[in-house]
Image (cartoon, rainbow, N blue to C red; front, side, top):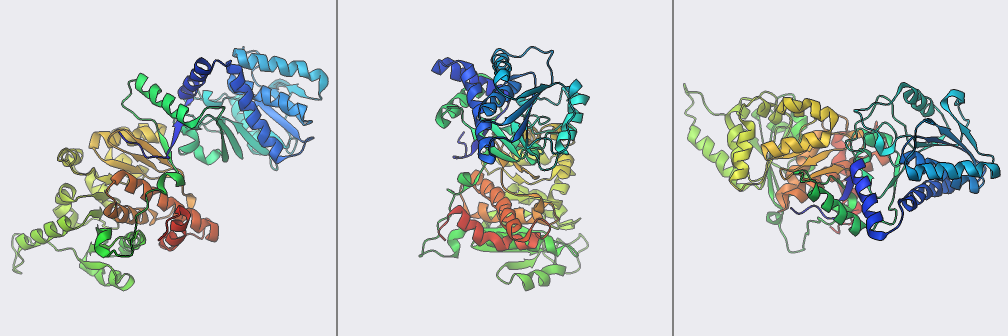
Length: 546
């Protein structure tokens, strides 16, 4: 299995513990050195943000996350900050390193004006502190053990504090590090200082929304060493799942599609978009505009006759024609069904990719042609109404398993959560608990690429590989955004031989268009129809020369 280069690994609580122990075993340093380095990263951030004398409140829990808080509190006090620590679980025994650092902080009280509080004698007032640092749970939080009412109330109070900078140690309390799923209240971080590597919960939806700006402190763990150890961990676990990874600008910028001076349109692929219906021409228009933005050589469109003129008016450069209708058995118009089917087969064989479904509605042609298109298309993207038709087929997963068994590229499915649940009703509960795991399970059982759309879109492969996209924003939460993604997928897959790279590029590019648009127009000002206008700026950001 070849993972995408320069994609970032993301880890959970178990992975972090494995890395920490491997570091101690291999380099011979005590684990308390890692805690000192972790706390120093938090301290360094606060020193960058403010001068000494500011008021800082640390929320200290009962695990090593609390130990990080006690340690950073001691360090900041030495820089002249007015430090307070809220000891949330004073009756609980701390792990050895955390206990030693709490003891060190207590011994320093004689030399500073630091304060220690407990929930019983503490009341948080607005604007009481310049910084509030979350060291309550870290990666120790698991939704199977929800937060107590006292902690939930504290978090709600902290989140209501205005003009206070909130910093999370490792991961905000209330976010499951392995999945990104959240408790009913979460620490709303302005910054998160995480250690060794990103946590899955910081990259995945919905946890990524509450993590603020993320700073990764390596704790002396070299990237190559960390990658090796994480691969070893997954081998030892005998898991058929893969290490989750994050798609970044560095991941996709190397996928450049070269455009030499002596090239022509035939060098850049042919894509076919099939969809649209009376009253829903906008969806297929958005898809074809996005396909053109990829630089694909030919864009064919097949759509109902009623909207052909609409599409030709907005995109004369596209090769647009109507979807032929198979005649009924009482054919009185001398329509030759054999010719119709032959022409379909010829077109689908000619193009490099097919994007199926945008704006199709409840169309008879989907019933007539869906199975053949799914079986014969070289590269296939299915979205929107195409997915809804699939969900009504009893054997849809077998259809794609057979396709894959014949050595064809896996089909690419692009569901939003509602469509996902229609495709796989038995995975609905898992989807709510762990988007990454649900996407991987559907990809494996159906032998497809699953692009699970959302704030942090998930790309899952039949091999078990799973990637979380880091680009994009809430401006994409508008009807039509998915049609743009379908067009990008169709255009890039038509041009690129490596389907994994093409899909990763399309997903990241889609989010990057939205990020560029928001910078100019604001969240509310971005319309899906304007996204393709930002393609030139996106290519410049990728560093592509042409």
